[in-house]
Image (cartoon, rainbow, N blue to C red; front, side, top):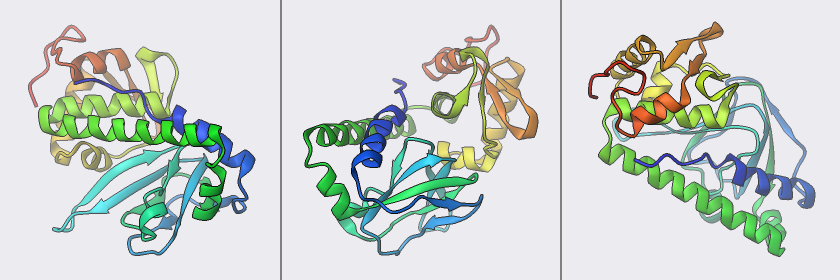
Length: 234
């Protein structure tokens, strides 16, 4: 299972161009827990994140919640509405957040420039590659390796510090991790205990996590003894 770099760098290039060249609206400040948009809402525009974290979820037919993605500074979200004009997912601020809405007409005008067009393609290709990698994980990897891969991705995208002690700055609940991984909360709790016992994960203040990124990456790639102690299969 190949681990991909997060798409934030590609998103940051597009975000920078939109911020410099577009006539987007004024920044919108959202308190923690505020709804940015919901399913069925008509909105032909996208959002860029300049501060904070936003989670995007969708509901299954049987009422379960699926956490699709967590967006941070430099990310672009809601771009599917550029085509459909109707929101299919729910976006909620996980922290105090600042976003700017870019209307469809402004976005299309902006990307007529060659540099903006190339940045848009780079961003969309990165997003597609990331989604393909997640589908591959769901099909081929057990829940423990999917959790390890998810923690690596969160660490790279949202963490700080040295790679063997990177802190994921925002608290993410076990239920949210289960929604990202496609597993039950009990399985996530089980593997978090194993990761802590083997030194791959450490608890930090305010419910955050410190992770051994290379160790988790090795486990996600198939090494059960990446920290010197065997881990059970998922």
